[in-house]
Image (cartoon, rainbow, N blue to C red; front, side, top):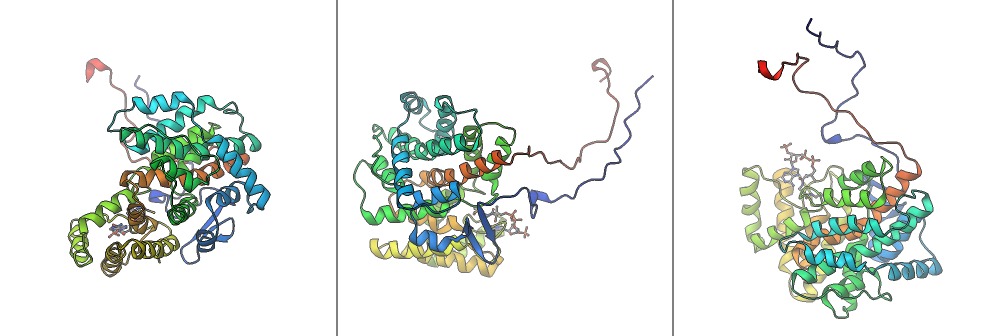
Length: 384
Ligand code: COA
């Protein structure tokens, strides 16, 4: 006798929100973003942090919940300095990657590979997770710079323990001591990109480790999620737009043509901020100051023309990725490193969220709204 289809479940369906818009998916004490009030890390306004704090202070703040005193900061800097060196095998692996590999994929592979060297990989206690976080945050810049140099046919450079994160990054990329003003701008980028609540990559990290998987798996997932142009990849695409637009007078037509074709304009729009992204305002000023210093004032003018058109045409505002793009460019950073640098900074946020997730874990397991065919009977292979 043929089996009867199962009766439909009488369990009530939870509310559905496409793209999880407006859904509160967990609790966090790390970061608050508000459409009106802007962005705060552990209660501190992003403008104050971006203009006054350094990235290592932010790492400490995100992980421990409070700003460090001088001794705590010195201890952290020392730990970071010691943890930067990569296992030789990871450097060998980077040499083996296809030359066409995107640096985000190299970073993703490198972080995944590092898991095997961490003696505390499967210890998810708070203290072990804090130690792993420092190891990961210390090494991501090294992977990024080493791979970049290898693709340029140069040898990787040994990290300098006495340098802060931004200075060491520029040192490892270029092999010369960076000027103070370049270090300051780079540090500001690191601070601004360090954390942003339950964005797609952070949520990917939290989802991964909510299965009690490890921190390296969480950061690897996050790097994969960040790479896409609707998330971190937007800062790479935004630079292509600036170059393509070329001059401020061409911005309006450039935007209108693409909007007419229903294309997304990179560096604009945000799921949470509907009246502008507070990080964008800081980066606009950095872009303006840098343009004046370097005689490249056209970038900020192109950005302003793009912003004016997007506000008029779509009522949309720029996000952090718009002005970050020409800022990276003026620092002589190759454009395909824009997103990996974002990832290096965001590793601080990801690791903080992973620690928080493991400290109060419940597996993240949402439901889907089934839209497929209804119950039907299986037909044997011969009768199909
Ligand atoms: N360019 C053109 N139109 C955009 C847009 C953009 N950058 N961002 C949003 N819109 C439009 C959408 O097409 C949609 O219009 P419609 O209602 O006429 O269909 C409306 O604004 C709402 O956008 P939606 O895609 O629903 O917003 P979202 O919250 O799902 O997506 C982003 C948010 C960030 C993914 C989206 O704004 C985007 O793709 N931005 C460009 C990529 C980017 O800069 N990402 C970095 C984010 S920090």
